[in-house]
Length: 213
Image (cartoon, rainbow, N blue to C red; front, side, top):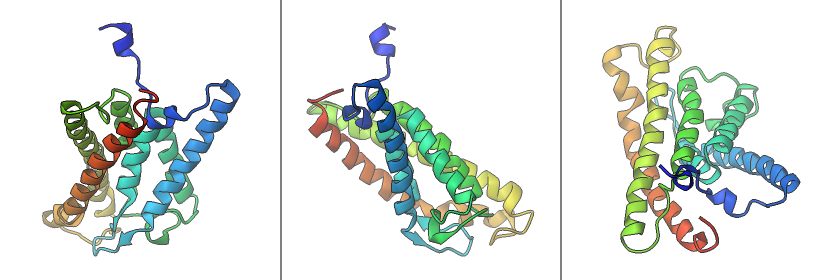
């Protein structure tokens, strides 16, 4: 593999990142704060569920932040978001402040999901130029977002099954109803979020591509 091929590609944030070192550091901080704000805003779109895990727009925000900021900044933004929520700042879904018993695993999944999606964006999965390149970018974006979503579901379901249910923190007490409480009702929304990202990210790159990356 050549050195050029091994180098990470610029993300959407890198397109507007200043070249001057001092300015770029300030920009990185602002980008992370903006990522936290975006996920916080998406969290306000929430539908309560009997399981205690609401249907929200958070996942969409997580995936976008990861893709736009890249692995490191995306993970930092989501770590900051989770830390603020656990500290009691009402940034979580449905105004929840502090420790969210049933949904804590999903929140933990936000950080690695943003990192992995950002890493794939730095490999160019969310972009392509013209014709088959654009179609390939759409397919790869869908796959990247699916991987990120699966990471969130995996940690969320694992926490729900091993901690929330045994301690009586969850709305479901029987393992037979686990997937019905933690996965099946959320799949349609996940598909919609992935579809939106499939259209949005390659479309944005089609506009900014001539400038960089």
